[in-house]
Length: 359
Image (cartoon, rainbow, N blue to C red):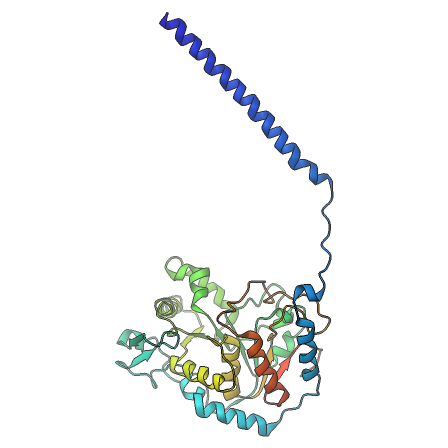
C-alpha cells in the first residue's frame, strides 16, 4: 500500500514537472514572439530637435552674447593693467596661489576654504609634500591659453592655436588623445585635478595605482594642481597622489592650491557681482592667468547647450555629456563676467572654430 502511494506521488510530481515545463515554454514563446515582432519595423531616425527645445530661452541669450562678442577685439592695455592690479592686490596669486615650503611653515594652520570651521595643522610629513619653491617665475609669460572643457571645442580645429601659446593651462585632467588633439591641442604646462576624479576613476588610489600614473603620461612634466585643502575629505587622497607620483617616479609635478588664495579669490569675484557657492576651475585658472600672463586667451568656455554659430546642439564637455553640479557653479554668471572682460579688452574669449594661421 505504501509502495503504491509513493508510486502515485512520484507520477504526480513527474506530471506536474512536464506540465510546468510546457507552460514555461508557451509563456517564453509568447513573450519572445512579442519581443521579436517590433524588430520587423526599422527604428525611426530621431529628427534633430529645434534649438528652442534643446535650450529654452537660449536663442535670445545667445543673440545678446554674439552682439557683444561681434565687436572687433583689441587688447586695451590700460583696462588690462587696472584689472590685473586689482586682482593682484586682493589675491596675490604670484606668491600665494600655491602652497610652498617658503610660504607655509611646519606648525602653521591651514583653514579649509570650503569648510571654514575646519583647519589642519601642518605636520613635517604634510610639509614634505609642499613645493619647495614657487612654481611660477617672477616675469610674466607673454601668451597663456586657458582651456576649458566645453562642448564648443568639438570639431573646432583650435588645437594648433592653443599649442602656440607660451603657457597652456587645462582643467580636470581632460583627454587629449584619440582625435581630440586637432581641436584641443596637446601642450600642457599646468593641469588641475579635482580630488573627486581620483576617487571615482582610480579608487582613491587605495588599490592599483599604475593606471593613474599611466594616465598622467599625456601631460608630460606639467604641474598638477590639486585643491587638497578645500574640503577635509580631499586631503588624504591628495597626499596619496603625491606619494604615488614619487613612488612611480612620474615626471608630473604635483602642487597644492593655497586655501587662503581661493578664499581671497572668491571674495574678489563676489565684489565683482558673482554670487556662486563655489568658483569653477575655469574661472579660477583664468584669474590666475591674468596675474601670470600678459595676454590671456580662453578656449572651451561656453555655458549653453547650443553652439553660438548655427545653434546646433552641443554636449556639456567636448569628450562627454556629463552634467556639472549647477548648485555649486554659476556657469552663465561666470561667463557673463568673462565676456565683460573680453569686451573691455582685458582677455580674449574664443567662441567657435579657429581658422588656420589665426592668432
